[in-house]
Amino acid sequence: MRIVGLVSLLLAVAPAFAIEATFTPNPADSAENGGAGPLPQSLEQRKQLLELSVAIAQTPDPASTLSHVAQQNGISAEELGAMLDRNTRDLQESGQLEEMLQGVQANLAAQGGRGASGTLPRRIIGLFTSLIVGIGKATAGQVARHPKHSSLLAVVVILTLLTLHNIPKNGLVMSSGTSPFSRGHTTFLNPPIQYMQQHYVDISDEWESSLPETVKVKKSKAGKQIGGIGITRSLDLDVSGSQTDKVTTETQLDREGYALIATASRLINVEDVIDIEQNDDDAESNQMEEAMEIMLDSISSLFGDRKFSEYTTALKWRSFVVAAEDDDTLEGAVMSMRLLGDFGRYGIQPFCISYESDDEVDDVTMTRCVAFHTLRGGHFDGELRFAIDTNKDRTGAIISVTLAIPDGGRTPTIRLARSMVESLTSSIVRSSQMRIKQAASRRNQSKHYRARSAAQAKEKRHLRYEQEKLQEEMAAERKRKWKRNNPDAGHYRPSGHRLRSPGGSPNFVS
Image (tube, rainbow, N blue to C red; front, side):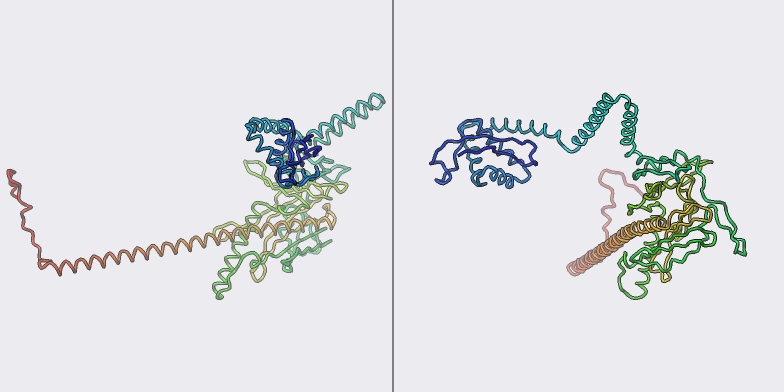
């Protein structure tokens, strides 16, 4: 019997090797006659079989590996397993197993160390290295064949290397601000959020609102003016038609004083995120008020943290604080969105806070509305407002995002404006639902803990009372027995002997 190429182990085993072995033609030792099959003649071949046995044992699935190796060599898994077991037993009986096993393990460890160089990170590094070396060789070859084109090739190589360097750093900036050939800050790829923040922090001294000057509304008898910072403060929008299952979007064009108003809203029903027990009317009303308090507090904390884009991939939002004059601080924000920039690429829009409205509930400040206006260097001129409202029945909260562009300001496309407010609203709703559920869960755990602690304290007080009562009854019973068995009980009079001075000591006379 002859086995050719005993092992092409799976890729799960780092070393891959083949074994060439010849065996003794002993018919009495064949598997058909009850033996374990022929064994190789040389010690080197026995060592190779031991290496095979150790390699199979180190695989994640030894049984599958054994079957695969046996199938590759045209024998059954049982025959191969019996052969490996007998080889191990023979080496153990001859006293050569430990020494040979140490050598096999050292060999496999050395091969595994060499195979570690083929891991994925090293392969990636090797790929980039080979790419750079290949570019260098190709450039050198082109320069040698076409010396006149050497300058052009050098420029191409430098631009390629700069592109590879800037892609992970800033997304490959196409334009850093407004210019005759660009609408605003644009990157070719999705820019890192840290780059956007740091860029506008560095130029915080140059921040300037991009909103047009205030304009008096012609049809307003009271002389109403629209424009400037805070244009959404007096903007009255009806969001009562908000639904719980989808985002409701409304777009208004050429409204008096405004070039574009895009509003997206959605209702979060308190019963959809917090379980309310069906008890009597008073208890259910109290639970509803408590649930509404949890909901509004959670959404308010989300607005305070400015977590507006946690669950959306359409855009990125980051708020930050910079130092201002007179040891004060100024809050800014930056947003990146695809199709907002030049040529349909990623546009970066800077903002600065316009105003923030709070409500005082039980000495706790709750943010209900926050607005940001655009800065110069962006792609549109307007104000973005985030607001929280309650429905008429006070059974849910309405989250709305409004983009208002005044007359004279640059406007994004209607499709882009709708996508912007819808993405922000959907992300805020999902983040709010997560926070509401977490807050309700913590409140329930605290309530259950307090109830359990109160029950345990009550049980301990009852047990202590029962023990004290039992002790008093036992004392009264002992007193009754003492009086019944002692005729002089209750008539004890001191003899005064203990008040006498001991013998030999002076008598003290009072």
